[in-house]
Length: 225
Image 1 (spheres, rainbow, N blue to C red):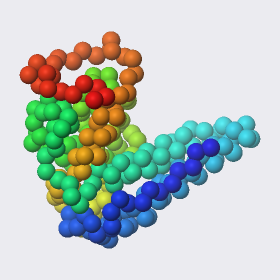
Image 2 (cartoon, rainbow, N blue to C red):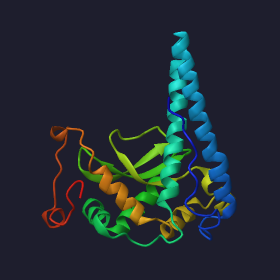
Image 3 (cartoon, rainbow, N blue to C red):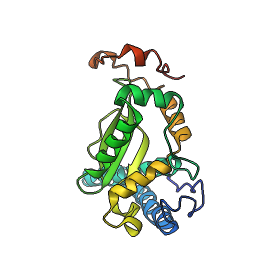
Image 4 (spheres, one colour):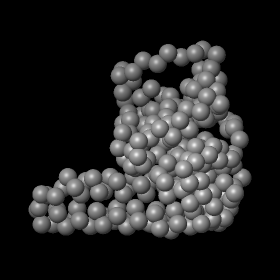
């Protein structure tokens, strides 16, 4: 049986100041993230109990509870690793080439990602994802932690747009918070996730056609490089 656990932060609570305060980091990690871990483990126990009793009358609610909490746990775990006190600036390597190819440049990508986060209705996340079907990068809105997801997309960089991620410091100025994150992105972490995501093959080559710009495609790293 799976048991989820809260990973420690890879840096001190105050390491991301002044962009994210120590108070927010402590509450966000130790309270909010821990709550999703606990919720996921409770849902698993309840599903185990339902199987033991052969009673699946509450299965739909349990599936929703599991999806909400596990997704919240996974997205937060990626988010912490996407950030670094030594981060920020534009990326290099294969992810930089792919961003140029798929968005037309880093500035355009940043604008699209921030707008994706700013226009979420209610609570949720924005994400840079790798689509193993089209073999391209894209952005997506994730309502709550799990709804409105484009299936097959693998998140490699995520933006927490829930109010608890910024309100104590930025109040209603959430777009300032999204801009501040640009000073913290750990592009080495994103690059590693990008390279691993490219190894995923769903064997669906015939379900999408992607026009390739020759001058960019010739520079793009091959999958798994």
